[in-house]
Amino acid sequence: MEKDSILREVTLWLRDFCDQFRSVHVDHLERKWINIALLTIALLVGIITIDAFLHSVNPPGRVETIDSAKLHLSKEFAESNLGVQIDEKGEIVVRMVAGRYSFFPKHISVPAETKMTFRWVSMDVLHGVHIPMTNMSTMIVPGYVAQITTSFPKPGEYPMLCNEYCGLGHNHMWSNVSVIAKEDWVKPEIVKVNKEAGKGAGDE
Ligand code: CUA
Image 1 (cartoon, helix red, strand yellow):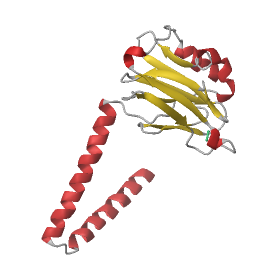
Image 2 (image 1 turned 180 degrees about the horizontal axis):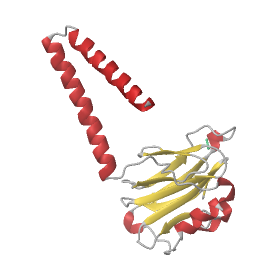
Image 3 (image 1 turned 90 degrees about the vertical axis):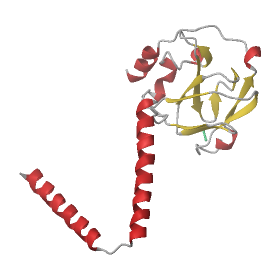
Image 4 (image 1 turned 120 degrees about the vertical axis):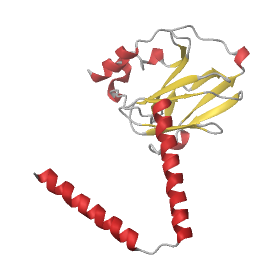
């Protein structure tokens, strides 16, 4: 009953609004441009929506949770499992922990022109990660796994900086990324990581 009356109210209000809108004199040319602007907005929103579904674009937070206080007990983000690895599918996965005031490990080497997935977690407060001259930038929210898949087009030395103020040492929080020519890069051994186990340990 309640729902019906609210719905009726909203319908009436909308009808009233449309009537008022129609009664306002809008110049023919102006109306045309309003329509073009609305269509452009609809087109852009449409493209974003379709792209989000087709390419499963989602925020880096991905709502994948992890207990920040128990990272050392999680299989995935235990100290021995950090850094650059090749998973069972042959893809490069880089796992890093952000904490005041560094990223661990402090230095990583990755190949240029190769797709790789970064997975970060914070062990204390909110941090950010930014690699200048690349499209790499995301927040690392405590309690969540931040994930970005990217590739570095050019070899070189890149800093990996924290871009969220996290305390007095924020300015000194960085790691180094060596991007090495594809043919010179030495593959780490394949390590199988049970992602589920890593995830579960944090939730216990
Ligand atoms: Cu970590 Cu700023």
